[in-house]
Length: 129
Image 1 (cartoon, rainbow, N blue to C red):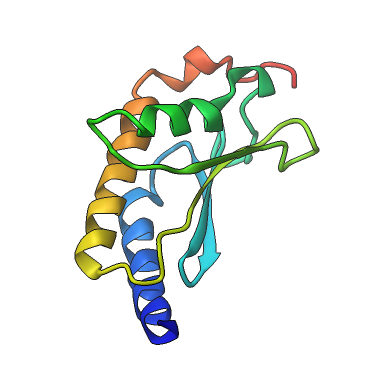
Image 2 (image 1 turned 90 degrees about the vertical axis):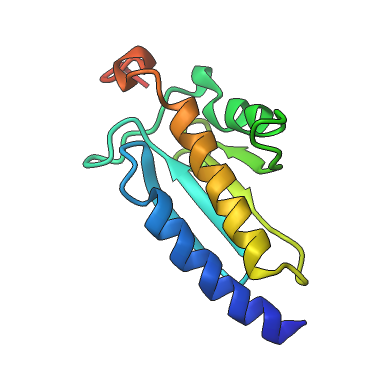
């Protein structure tokens, strides 16, 4: 199992970065093995988080359960200062296959793209946090 975690973790890291690293609302992708976090920001260059009132991570998590995506992600918030900052966690099972990872990364990529298809201005860019 540990050998698979190492192999598939490397695949997951590579594919996540290829698929979503350039998205304007993805601030960071970090993790190790089969435990990865994706941080969301209003402005990538300054790493300004979304206002807590937007509930970005929770809404992404709920949308991911839709049949269109069929992916469960764990939402988290308050990572910047205890109130602001949104992220999701991906933690697939240790026996995951490369095909499963490819499906998961594609689903998460579509989920993020669709969720943020509303222009970021709609999220009160520059709003006082």
